[in-house]
Length: 121
Image (cartoon, rainbow, N blue to C red):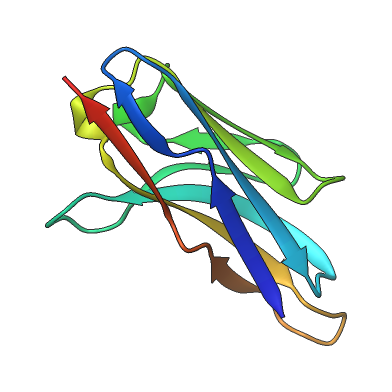
């Protein structure tokens, strides 16, 4: 069984910062690309940022220069440092991990339960 547990969400004023964490635990043979997605009320889930095993990163245009994704492969953990937050960043943030559970299994995507981020104006 695999679990992804996010933490670090909350309520912050515009211009403030939050640091999200996502710990992946359970039966893991290899942990591949990891990422953060978000879903605002009435909108589709969208990619925020993703990071490869070697540390290559991609960001949505809306967060470039404000958000930083990182990972600690020794802890099976990824982070999202969010600076200069705006009210439009308000959403439920989900972490995603692509991983193989064993040498015999194919890679698959796993999701966390989500953490609420609310930015007040």
